[in-house]
Amino acid sequence: MTEPAISVTGVDRVFGKGRKQVVALTDVDLTVADGEFVALIGPSGCGKSTLLRLVADLDTATSGEIKVFGKGARQARLDQDYGIAFQQAGLLPWRTVAGNIELPLKIHGAAPALRKARVAELLELVGLTDFAKNHPDQLSGGMQQRVAIARALAESPRLLLMDEPFGALDEITRERMQNELVRICAETGAAVLFVTHSIPEAVFLSDRVVVMSPRPGRITGIVDVRADGLADHHDRTERARDQEGFFRAVAEVRALLHGGASTSSAGVEPAGVGVEER
Amino acid sequence: MAQLWNRFRAVVFGVLGVAAVVATWDVYKAFGPEQGVLVGDTRVLPRTTDLAMPHSWEMLQRFGEPVTGLPDAPDAIRAVFDASMFSLGLAARGWLIGVVVGMLLALLMSRLRIVESALLPWVILSQTVPLIAIAPLVRRWGSEIQIGSYVWSSEDSVAVIAAYLAFFPVAVGALRGLKSPDKTHLDLMRAYGVGWWRSLITLRLPSSVPYLLPALRLAAASAVIGAVVAEVSIGLKGGLGRMVIDYAVAASGDPAKPWAPIFGAVAVGLAAAGAIGLLGLALRPFRLTGVSTQ
Image 1 (cartoon, rainbow over the protein chains, first blue to last red):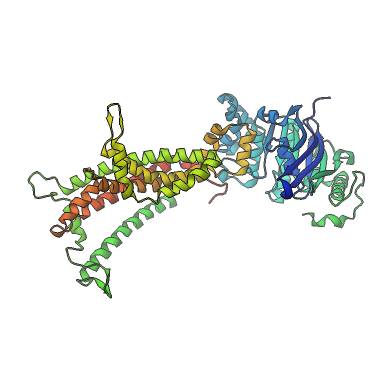
Image 2 (cartoon, each protein chain N blue to C red; image 1 turned 90 degrees about the vertical axis):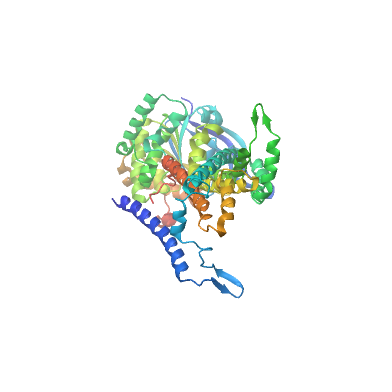
C-alpha cells in the first residue's frame, strides 16, 4: 500500500475570536488514496473550499493534522507536490496562453528547452495548440479554464486540487469540460480533490463523493460511486451519465445533502426532492 | 483599416479643437465690446484692445522677431526654445526623482501595512504645503550640502521641487496598482511557494501598470508645473519661469511678447505627455486587464 495522497485527521478550523467566532470546520477526517478522485460537495458555507485551502496550505488549520504524500502541508506546497485550479481561471492577462502554462515551470527554474517541450505537450493535452500565442482575453471562459488546468498540470503533480473550476461555466461547456477532465485524469493518473456544488458533476467525476454540511462545517457522509456500479473514474465515459448506477449515486448524495445520516440510506427518495438543486 | 481611420480622426479632431480656440479668440476680439463685458462691477469677459488681446497671428509672428531691440538679440523662437529645453530638462530630472521616490514609498507601503498607516497621511499632507513656501527652504537646505567636489546648485533645488510634486501621484497610483492583483493570483503565487520579491516581479509590478501609467502622466504634468514655478520662486535664470516674468514686463509696449513663453510651456507639457505616451506603447501588453474582450 502506497502513501495516501491526502490524509486529514481531526482537523478543526475556527475563524475569528470570542463572540464573532465562526467554526468553519470541525473534526474532519478524510483520506484520498493515490490516484483516487474525490469530490467535496455541500451547500455554501459548509467549509469545502476551506478544507481544500488547508490541504493546499493556503490557510492553516486551528488543530489537527494534514499530510500530503506523508509530508506536512507546508512542505508539500514548497515541494510543488500538487497543482491547483480555482473557480476563476486566474490567468495573467499580459502573458500568452503558452506563457501562462509555462509560468510555474519558469518560476521554479526549468530549462527553456524543457519548458517548451512540456508546454507543447500540455497544449496538446487540453486541445489548445492553435491558441498558444493568444492572450487570455481572446479566449472563451471554457478555454481559459482549460489553460488553467494545463498550468496546474505543468509540473506533473501527483495531486490536483480543484476549487469549483467549472463553477462559472455554462452547462453545455461544463459537461464537455467534465469529459475532458476524466480523459486528462486517466492520462496523468493524478489524485484529485475536487470541490463542487453540482451533484451530477460530483458523481460523474469521482470515485468517492464526500458530502458536507454547514454550521459547523463537517463531513456528513461519503458515497462510494464505484459501489453503485460505475466504472473506476479513469475508465468512465460520457455514457456513465445514463447508467442506472449514476442515478442511484445521485440519489444517495442528494439524500445525504438533505439530512440523511448514513451512507446506506440508498436512493429511495422521491425523484421530486432534488428539483431545487439546480 | 477602421483602426487607421480612428487614428486619423483623432488627429483631425485635435486640429479642429485648436482651430476652434483660435477662431473664438479672434472672433471675440473682432466683435466683442472694447471694454469687455461687465456684470455690475465684475468684468466677466476681457477687454478686446490690442493691449489685452493681441491677434493670434501677431503672437505667432512675434516668434520670428528678435527678443529685444539690441543688435545681437536672438529671435524669440530661439530664446523660447532654449528656455523650454532648459525647463524640460529640469522637469525630467524632477520627474525621475519623483518616480523613484514614489515607487519606493509605494513598495514600502504595500509591503507593510503599518508603514502605510504611518506614511500615507503624510504623503497626502505634503501636497497641501504651497510650493512657494518650500522653495526657499529647499534652496537653503541645499546650500548646506556639499559632497566631495559636488556643490548643490539652484538647478538641483528646482529639480527637487519638481520631484516634490511628481512623487505624489506615483506613490498613490503605484500603491493601488501593487494591491490590485486578484485573490486567485495571490493564492497561486503562494501555491508556487514564491517569496515577496519574486511575486513582485511576476505579478504585482505587471498588474500595477494600468494604474501606473496615468499616475506617470500626471507626474509629468506636475513636474513641468513644479519646475516652472520653482524657477520663479528660486529666481533661476535660463528657464521658462524666469522668462514669463521677464517678458511680462514688456507687455505694455509689446503685447504679443508675454505669450511666447506661455506657448513654450504648453509645448513642454505636450512633450512630457508625449514621452509618457511612448512609454505606454512600450508597456502595451501589461495594459491588458481583466479577461474579457472590450
